[in-house]
Image (cartoon, rainbow, N blue to C red; front, top):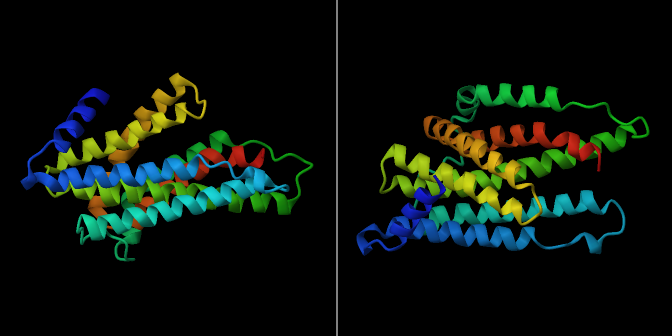
Length: 235
């Protein structure tokens, strides 16, 4: 799968001028993703002396939101995508379509649930929940703006429905290989690539059926919140 996707991207980058929209889409993706990698790699924890981990998560959330806005700008101004779906229209329709993802988030939250440490106060729990929510929804905002708002819509200008969904979703899965740089386990990362690719397909179908980007951002954020909240409680 990885080889096929890389092959498609290589072919797209060498296309003739009449297909330059695909090339512009890929180059815009690479630009935004590179900016994200640079910002995400910044070690800003040394600036803070108290609650440095939580503050760092908030700062990185802001970086993701800024990069997501950059993706929207590229989609509108560079790729001239008019139906981005960033208005309120059909938001709840998207949530209804994505109800399996909401159910999945609830199941993950139940499976991952652990007792809150007794020494932790209610204020500390609330603060961690708010920081975790902000962090996970910023991840959803950036990744959905990048892979559905920009990449998928750009591909749909030239490619068929199925091809655009598969290539954009596979790209979404493959870029999680960058977790290896942060020291993630190889086998776990490959598993993550597989399920994020499948998730990308589900997000894409939900997005195209509802026409609302905010609904898939919310669904994405709920899944990540269910996965990572236990981690934040332990910080």
